[in-house]
Length: 351
Figure 1 (cartoon, rainbow, N blue to C red):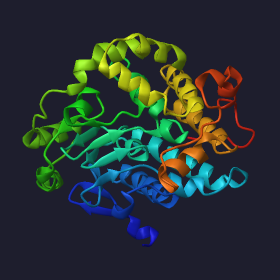
Figure 2 (cartoon, helix red, strand yellow; figure 1 turned 30 degrees about the vertical axis):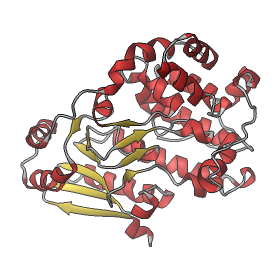
Figure 3 (cartoon, helix red, strand yellow; figure 1 turned 120 degrees about the vertical axis):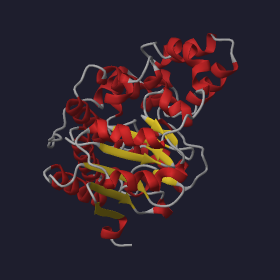
Figure 4 (cartoon, rainbow, N blue to C red; figure 1 turned 180 degrees about the vertical axis):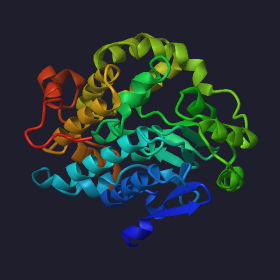
């Protein structure tokens, strides 16, 4: 498939429509796709005929399962420029979405993870369906919840952001709305009619979009996550991964035991970096958070980090048995963590 076919652009009525068109790859993002999307957003931001933008994924499985990290990891640390080029291009596009001056409507009708979160969560409207499965699972592959995770996660209710960033917990339906990630819910069989209605409408601002969404929206029901909210907020209010794990260990509850077991499988150094990332991100403006993330991921891909081992175990060999280095959180020093936040010798991210 050519690059031009991997992401499609259409102008329909007052809408600019982006379709991620790699269904066999779960619509994962490449560097070239991010370049084309950024160019389209620049064009549509200045086009008075385009009143709103929609982004959607092709096929029935995924909106966007993330960036194509498997391809990125195939380049050794000694030749990691393709990875840093991808992240820089993706983050510029993410920032473009955050600052986009018109309604930006993401149709999360399927798997939405990693890079898929980055092209949706920063827009004005995130419509989820019964097929949406949300997660930021980067701690399982030695990475961090990037694409603006350090900005939006600490701004979720309570300590849900720290919980989602460390555990990679998967959310569906009402839980995605409950967490403040989705803004509306509608069944997938109503998506096409919604887009058609929006294209024919007179859109002046986001309130017009809200009115049309209301005509198609449904109630996803109660959020199962609410049952554990007090436990989440208490345990993930701790300021270190060691204290979080100790807190969970002290709770006599099945949820706490399962959550602790999950954390013990994640990359120790990633978890320690993630805690610091989210704590810092809560104090940063969006662009500064993106610059921080670029420093972190640039350092991660520059040495034989857990990222390469995590991608091998989860996405290449699929043995689900990574050998982390260091093997435990106790072995991860403060200096190891701090090194990931150091200003880059090469060019910093420019937004």
